[in-house]
Image (cartoon, rainbow, N blue to C red; front, side, top):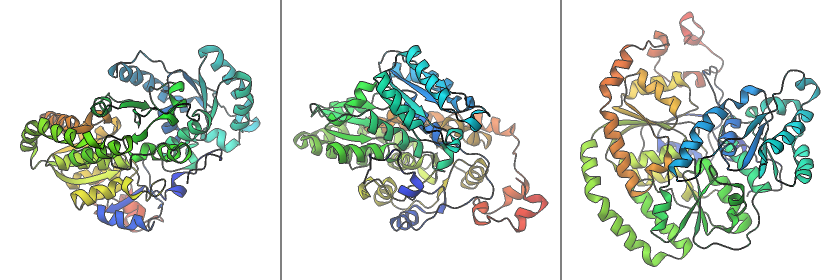
Length: 500
């Protein structure tokens, strides 16, 4: 059950029993997740991490017409520059007008951690209104604000009434959750409680598509069923978000991103969620189209559409499969999208030698098994023999890749490509998720992989000039997850050679 009466959503560790460390098989992980057997383990050594606030920023920074206030030290707004670069490119790719990112920071400093920063927050909200005249203002809390205990909700309530626009508190303090995706949930909770309105008039041909700022590929696919794609949240304006409740149904690129708002829209406004894996790969696209058609009353035309689409791409898909056959590939990506990539790669006939995801949710919002992407992957494609969960720890991923020896690495985030490059592995960043959706997306992915394989010599040359930062002890250590099992530190970990 989703509870929109609460000020903030429960973090994933408690709500979904999420974990950040596991090494085994896909089938074992599925079975143990059914009974919530796995616990969030401690790590005695960590090389890096990420932050829930960053995920909150990923969504709110790029809402058209809105302004965002990071109630935080100035360093917490470092992502604003990257967002301003990517959002305009993404808007143009989707045929939308140029878009600016409107972000201010309260610049919390040491004295504010003693006396509080609420006066700074009020002043910054007034400045955002004056400078940008936004349709809504999002206030993102931070570790500093959360530790001090600044009551951003009371300030938001006070100024929302005065300014006449939504002022949305987003509780995404990084220290509250070790699962970064909790920041997505926090942003969506704010949107659901302060932006979304009850439907004025239902739009029976409108499908909410929760995604990032990718290409318009869901639009043409849904258009073949006479439906319209309502892309949210990135690149959508506040008025569009207000009308999420008017859609015929809701889908998303992966449950990691948006199963929470999808469950809330179904519970609160009767907008059914498409309870099928997203359209990545042939069978998953077939099933997704059938479910969308069922929810929108288009069952009579969907089978003819599926058949014609199969016939249209069959020849090209066969050629791509033949060229990729037997190539060894490894996936390093976020939770459920890694499962979607795996499904596509197995459809293309590649030899999947391993998957590493950034976290794992042991259940879904609402407990819907049909939305369990790993369960669907194992059920449709069989066992995944080398499956691990690791929250972007380079020292672990380095060993995993070195042991797996793939011909190609596919990642979801740009900064992950570096590890593959240092090992001489051709690495492809699947940054625009939408581009791989549907039947055409599968063919497109195959061609991109073929192009990536042509760079093998380049990556080998890069590798020859890269020196490993890790000791011989670590490179020869058999277990990449050594520091999860030895949380107190012992044996080799305590010797002089035990340093990484």
